[in-house]
Amino acid sequence: MSVLQGDNSRCEFTGVTFAGHGQNLDTGTKVVHVGKNTSSYINTKSISKSDGISTFRSAVVVGQNAKGSKSSVSCESLMLDDISRSDTIPAMDIRTDDVDIGHEAKIGRISDDVVFYLMSRGMSEEDAKALIVSGFADNVSKELPLEYAVEMNNLIRLEMKGTVG
Amino acid sequence: MADQILNVSGLKVTVEDKEILHGLDLTLNAGETHVIMGPNGAGKSTLGSTLMGDPRYVITDGKIIFNGEDITGESADKISKKGMFLSFQNPVEVPGITLSNFIRSALEQKTGKHIRVWDFKKELEKTMEILNMDPSYAERDLNVGFSGGEKKKAEILQLLMLKPSLAILDETDSGLDVDAVRTVSEGIEQYKKTVGGALLIITHSTRILEALDVDATHVLVDGKIVHNGDQSLINEINENGFERFLN
Image (tube, rainbow over the protein chains, first blue to last red):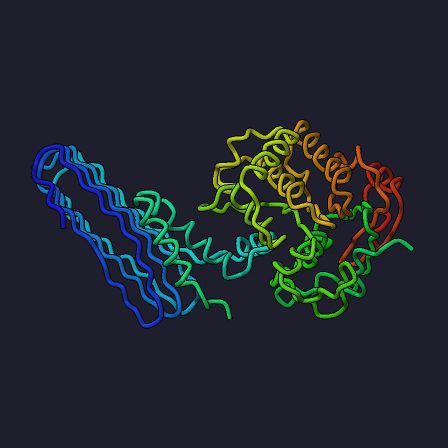
């Protein structure tokens, strides 16, 4: 949880989750805007496969004195098969006017068109799917230091191993 | 007889339980250029996708022989490695990999060899110049935010870099302005000249064909080839349309 106490303070929350078989990754964040002109930015990506469940909860509270504050929440989910699940649960408690609050949630599945396109250029089905998943998490991994970004892509590749029967 | 590169016989294809191709025959010899024309909904794009191994198109009967091997029901990545290439009508956007890295990894997949970055970059730059492509596109994510014209040029760029023995061009000229059509057909000529591969051009317009020597023209109506002819057939269809081939 972040509390934006001072005027003009700001915070950012970025997260990637990957829920595999038997996992229910219930994550979330909370931001409280107290000071004037404060801003928060929440950006998450959830991936679920093999009956994994991703749940993301967000709460944005804007107090009476937090005039001129801004908050942007964006949650994107990608489901790799039809037995997986993804939930986004946003909560907003806004107690003043003159604020700019946005919430955006997107849920999608892996596109057959893209898989076929990549395969037609010689990529195996597994590699094609791993590339699509890395691409989905791309704007988050760009925020990471290089060593971590490489590690994250390796993890995605590892998780995707054996998803193609 | 010249070497057959593609032999399709009695091909029946179903999409979502609806039969689209009803027994199609087609033969291409190595290095030849064939054109498939036909009205909307005749099954032209279905043919292209089926040849390339799209799993959504189910082959219920018939055979596809490519370079002497039976590839009926084979997966797209294997068909691609055998030397077939499909230029998509609507190339998809793939965030997370740059155009340059994508082509390099496709080449490495195909040849099974490591490709030196320096040599690759030089060839890529040269080829992009032929296609009038801004070199900055090489470092942008594959097709992401490309205009329609740049996407089609990126397809031809891949064609020239991957050097397949058979290239299927699915409506490569649709949605292009005059200059882009010229650039794309120059790219196709370049492919004929330097790679010498066979071409199967699926189209219902003829502008892209003007500069090419066409060996045969096939008219596809309602899931079947109903007429075969030579280059002159293109002009005839241009003037009179498909009416005389429809029942």
